[in-house]
Amino acid sequence: MGRATAANGKTDHTGTVPYTRTELMDVFNRCDKNGDGKLSRNELQAAFEVLGSKSPWCRAIWEHLRADKNRDGFIDKQEMEKLIDRVEKHGYLK
Image 1 (tube, one colour):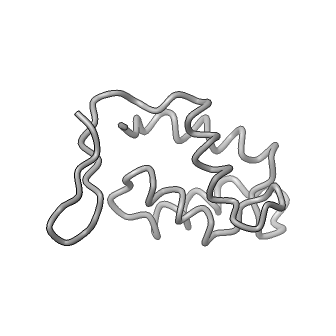
Image 2 (image 1 turned 90 degrees about the vertical axis):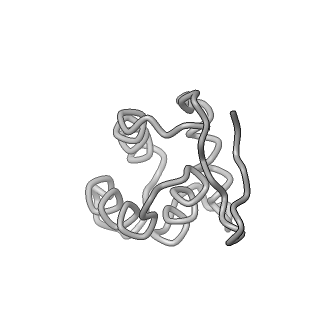
């Protein structure tokens, strides 16, 4: 199985294989649009959209609050490691 595009133009994430840690890191890195090595809340939301989250906006807010330990408004590389630990547990499928 893979991704199909629904009539509304949205991607349907109906895969059966979970993302690996490396693949998750790749998704988050690709969503770092300005290349600063950190994720803003908007970039994090884009990553959860790619992963097929049912509510990427809510997931981004929740995970951002949990991951941004230094409260600078961004998820840096160290914080991203912890974020990926949590995201792996959700079992997003590709």
